[in-house]
Image 1 (cartoon, rainbow, N blue to C red):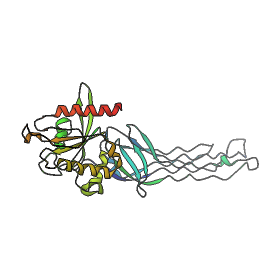
Image 2 (image 1 turned 30 degrees about the vertical axis):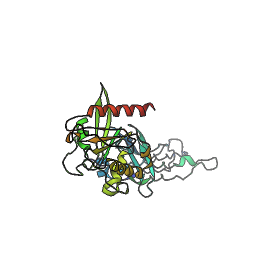
Image 3 (image 1 turned 90 degrees about the vertical axis):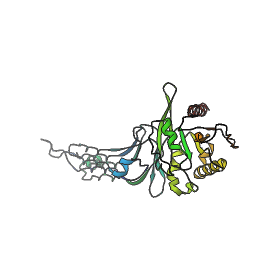
Image 4 (image 1 turned 90 degrees about the horizontal axis):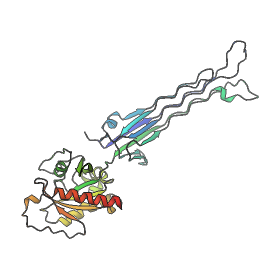
Length: 326
């Protein structure tokens, strides 16, 4: 089950209390202060793991709590630190404060670790308060409380190529033909309700990552048709591929509709390289000329017959290479 949004409560551990104690040794009737300090409370960390693809485990656990530090002991023994907790999430997870929507962390690299709640410091034992004028202090301090935070975990999948199109444009069929992805495919709109991601192999040992998001409709940037949830999965994409059915009577209008939804969602989309891909060319005559007057590269393919797929992959590799070199 693909889950890309979760509300989570985290709590770091309380620091252990410092204690009041005195040395009790034979032949030392008035031993000095020997109260130990409390241990630190455990921290809460988040770690990005490329082996994960969904926030499902995080969503259903909902609460993460680190261990408390132990109190100090006699003979200046420091209490044990509390156990820390590490939450594993997919690469591309953004963590925000629930109340303010402020970004706490954005984990973009595999193995990246961020502390999101710091454990409380341990309290001081009375040994810390001894002075030349007060050699037997009876003062200690309690441990500091841990942090409690209510957070939002939001996944933005990372991919090299993002497929954009109206519902039923053929995105799922294309990604299933080119990669190891197995999306649901049917002859009706909104078959895809969650993003699909697949590895497209080319050459000897090379590949790129392609993502297919659910079809966009007019008003997606305002949240219509769950547009906000879908559009964020394109934010980290390097190349946008607009899939338009070859029988579309107004392909330029369709492109403008999709392009406007992206641009109104975030300004970063304006600068991303793009390619228009006319799908389902097996349902028209071979001699039919495609009319598309935008200053954007375009080509046609058929995911059913395989026509143009190899050329499409070559073109994607070329664009991604140009972007990398540039």
